[in-house]
Length: 233
View 1 (cartoon, rainbow, N blue to C red):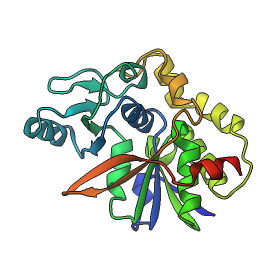
View 2 (tube, helix red, strand yellow; view 1 turned 120 degrees about the vertical axis):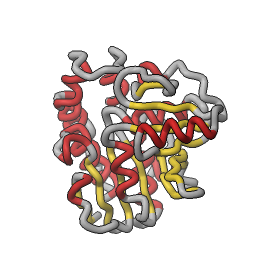
View 3 (cartoon, rainbow, N blue to C red; view 1 turned 60 degrees about the vertical axis):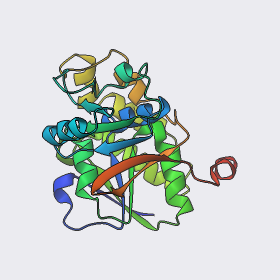
View 4 (spheres, one colour; view 1 turned 90 degrees about the vertical axis):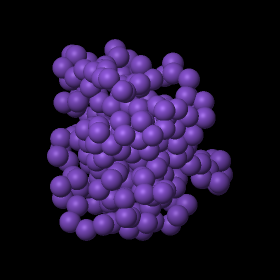
């Protein structure tokens, strides 16, 4: 696979296939939201947009980075989200980097959002679709976040059919600046288990595909129809 790894600001053109990676924590949180029953996730461009959507749809669940804030129901923490009941709900998510990255490539023909928790399923989608090339959007730290780059490189290797061992990639992510900041309480809206939850390889059997729906960018879980056969081959 011809894989490019770019920060959000480096996206000079719209790629055909984009994999937007945010390990700590946007797309780990999104995967947990689907595991807790969410039907879809609307990726908001700003906190004001998230609150406006929540105002128009009071039954939707609004989620943001950082500490709790008026109007928002949840914070961007897998440890805090894993006990939430989101059965059939729509979640509106706004984060510092992850949602920004997905919106930056909204016109791509295929947009996958990923972290380690959905790595293999994401690679399976790329393989099943016969994607010869893909742009991996490294969302954190202006494209320098090693947890995101490590995850992107791991998925690219798996998508290419290589027997890529995850250990080194997970080690890099665990030693990243984001992991240290979460573990040391530098960031707000954090649960003590967040780093460990972000490093759970293939916790979930689905990938996550984002696509425009009624002028909104909507993320949904997606299981490759041949996933069982591909996984055993």
